[in-house]
Length: 186
Image: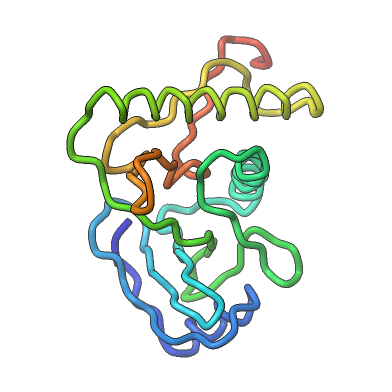
């Protein structure tokens, strides 16, 4: 996350309108990060993380990521809820970039590990595996199959929720990488 692309007032209104956000009160750039432009949109209805994809993400890729994130959220995995446009799409375009929106998830980066945090991470990883296994049984995916690597960098993948000591996943949709084991590859 970072701010590489500035949003004009028209872009801000376009994004808020596309996602049905009412009463936009502030837009704050999130400076720390690496490859995408990220903003916090505050509205009368809540807070949202708005990401502008700088590196040519495709709508279909983000749609598949959002389907995975919707599934995780529906199965109680502590992750941001993906938001869809009023037309039902995962993305829209603004400032010549593909845009996606998720609910803001309160918390702060975990700077040190301890037994409780590691146990919490283990519980969340089990929830993720369980939710994705149920999804795989229902629907045959065109994605390669195999292990899931969640980029377990403490500043990227999980944060400590402010209201409890439970871990929460802050970047599942864009951080899950699918590794194949030669099944499904021609």
